[in-house]
Amino acid sequence: MNRALFLGLAFVVFTSGCVIPGTDIVIPIPGFGGPREQTDDVVIITSFDAQPNKISPSQQTNLIAYVQNKGSERFANGGRFGTVSIELYDYCSDLYEDVTMRCGPQPEVGTLCVIDRLLPQEIKPITWALKAKQNITLPITCPPDGMKVAVRYSYSTPSSTTVSFIDPDEYQSQLERKTFKTIESQISAGEGPVKPFLTVEDQQPISAHEGSKVTFAFQIKNRGTEGQGFLVGNSIPKDKIIITAEDTELKAALDKCKEAWPAEITLIRKESSKYLCQIDVPANIISSIVNNKETTRTINIQISYEYEFRDYEKVTIEPKFIG
Image 1 (spheres, helix red, strand yellow):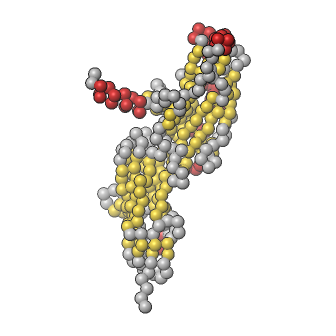
Image 2 (image 1 turned 45 degrees about the vertical axis):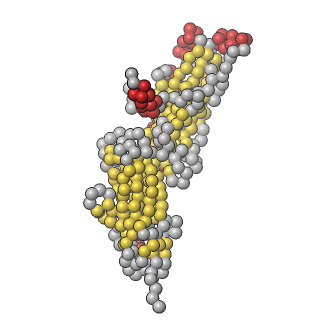
């Protein structure tokens, strides 16, 4: 095979990840040598400008926002992630005539634009035309911190975590031979600004025998741009969190942990509380470890949520005084 073609195919495999059989959960291939995360912000406003940003009464300003899909999947009406919406808000509407928006091929009155399709890496411009009212007699910048736009979309982000076990006799033998080495979980988080993290709190590999336990911690973090990216509602319902694993006993134990979580997992600032859970090492792992000496299991978690990316621009209305 041509070497360039081989490298190109390898790049596609390692960047696109794989789909968990029987689900629509996409998990990136775990990173080498440590945790791996993919794109944080997915749909962003690359720029938001007013042209001009200083106008006189009865004069018009055009607000232009450029929306980009930085992710690897498309947004589309009826598709997996649906449409993207962008809205002009908090713009001191009492100072202006009706807002004219260009969202599609024809201008229309309104402030909310629904983008029916946004392909990976595609950028779309959205324009709002605002005409200042004639009766403004004093200079004013309203709102003082700028007119605001917010782009909103639905998304889901997966992650995977490995947990490793060792046969007790093998563990003791390695200690005596001074060959025992601890292992870190391979944690891989997929695209999306809000990411789920499941960590193993115990030293690994864990000695798997009757009565042995393993402690997990679950947490959600907002990795979107500070000051611009926000989880809508600031919380994720527990039923929007899906746990999967090829090991059914391990999954069942973690589902029991999930039952103890609150109905809504809330982010304080940019992350949730850490939810600890200690479970018995499943019997099937204890029995299998006798022949295998060591084994590793993978746990997958996917969360679904709504997200908002915001920007702002200041516009000043300055009457022309004569005298």
